[in-house]
Length: 101
Image 1 (cartoon, rainbow, N blue to C red):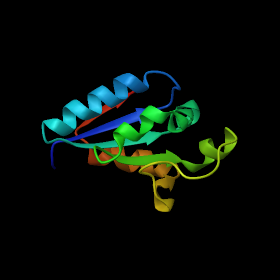
Image 2: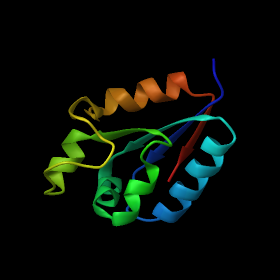
Image 3: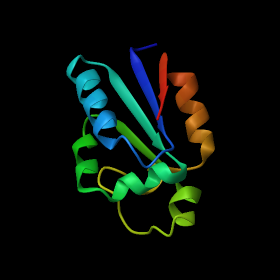
Image 4: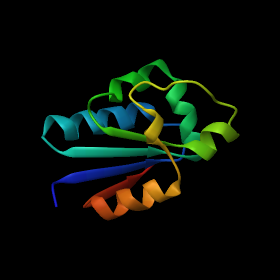
């Protein structure tokens, strides 16, 4: 297993902390995966969200995204990156460290 960090973001707060942590891990050569769910999907609408692009594999819960009235494209998130909670379960299995915001 590579040195991988998984981050679950279910809160619409602390984007600055998620960005700083992701940048620090990326700069140290860690692989980072982030799954946004619940109210955490609202962070995808913040201009600062783009700072995560290229530093982590980004996934968004499609159900939460739609339930919060969001639509359209998200920087760094492709069509296949809009996923179900199964993606979160995969991330837990793949990562040797897992944080929740």
